[in-house]
Image (cartoon, rainbow, N blue to C red; front, side, top):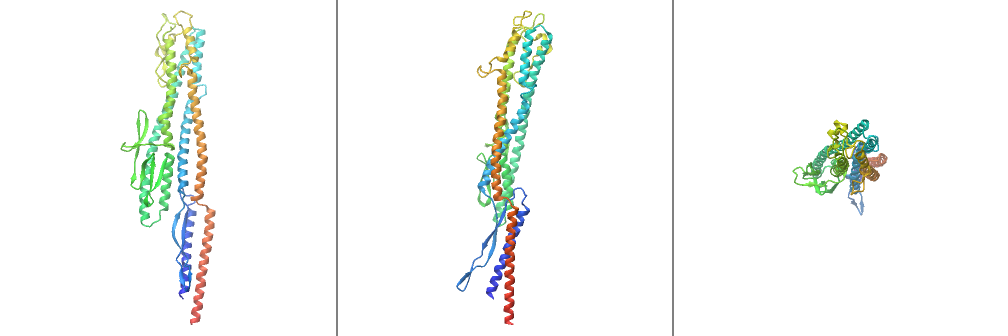
Length: 456
């Protein structure tokens, strides 16, 4: 009888273990579309064999746990590719917005307005006493100044908007690190109590992956299932808590510090890294080139204009054509804006002399920049070309990184994601084993009945 009881217990263990396996498979299927869910597998372990006479006989199987299927190497590769992809996409978005603001080539851009401005002075040199030609010069000068103002203001506004977005992203980093630290504590506590931590770890992985889109992070394991998350070598989340960050603005840009400003955090890559690079380096560089273009135009035209003469009686002199010092402040000088006779044409004050107008129209071809190798128009076009190059390069990098990210994500999903077909196949297998275990029980029951009949 003891032998039949052992067979019955073996079958019962088979029923219990396959029921648990079915539960796990069903949980996988229902979570197939749940973001961040990791496929689970029941761990089935043979129970110790028993000696029956001179033979060791197995006693079946038991479910000893549920394993969460993850590949840490693939997780790290996906995170690393994610921060590089988001950095490139962030840069591409910013450069594309700047390219739209610049809007070159166009009939209303700085390049076209510069040409029209110099052409207007050339036309005035042919008709130095013509009031219509003077009016055209005045209006073209105003358009040049306004186009510089608009472009500078547009880029500067984008610069301000990026600064605001950096603040928002730092706030999100703080939210994520707080949640990661909180989940670390829950995972350690649950693990110590013998509870399943799969759901908690899936939630933590979702937060860690989102964090990797914002900045380049390093993740390492701690005792008890906790993880240490670092940015630029600084621990920002662990089982002991999280470090809150803040964006600190200064005259040189924005830097990321700990909340008490005792520690600078070196943020690289990710959306936050891309915006910081654009805010601190790229956009100020563009604005410097734009301001240099405007200042060179202002200084050179004023140098010629202030030494020349208008058409009044007596002819005015000593007037600048432009006011201001850079692209944001350039404007028509008040004397020129209020009276077209103050526009200087003559170099010596005599009627009919056009040397000043010719000299100003010739500024177009003067090599005034880059150590006397580049004209004003070519210098500005160099800025436009640089922006176009930056757009293309960031787009190429984003495309490459997206292909790599897609490939690695696919490999990770093949390991951790749920395949409905595979789960259905496993369920059929569990069902067959369950049915077979049931038949063993039926067979043992019949054997019992036979023995009872014999005894009776």
